Length: 151
View 1 (cartoon, rainbow, N blue to C red):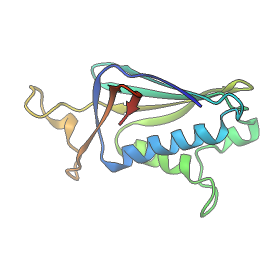
View 2: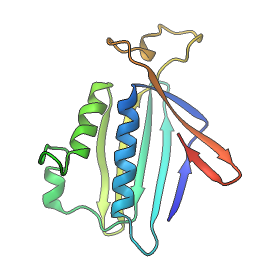
View 3: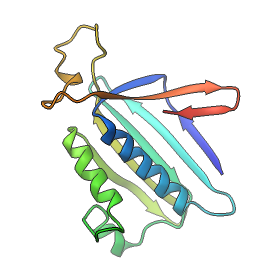
View 4: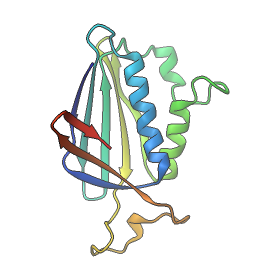
């Protein structure tokens, strides 16, 4: 399996453990549906002053039109809940998740989240806090001798 990650340093976003759950679900789906002989997953992060958008792409068979129509809806108790819950969590943090494109060469999902202001930096501070006082997650790229680690 090949993983290509383009992450510009650290990007602080609003949220707590639910943010990690969203990305774990997207990565697990990408691995599950990637082409078995030459699996490839691409991760990219684009930022604006207000948001960070993380895209996850695989080289799987794509998603059928029938499935696309209900992709983010609740399916059953144990199967098909991942994208539904990811949508609920992304919305909870003021963001969104969407299927950007799909076809015979794979699918691309995007998660857009509000950026947070790091502690000690100027700003109103509201971007880094939720009404419930939850923590913030960090999406970052750490280069190591063995490759790229996404945290």
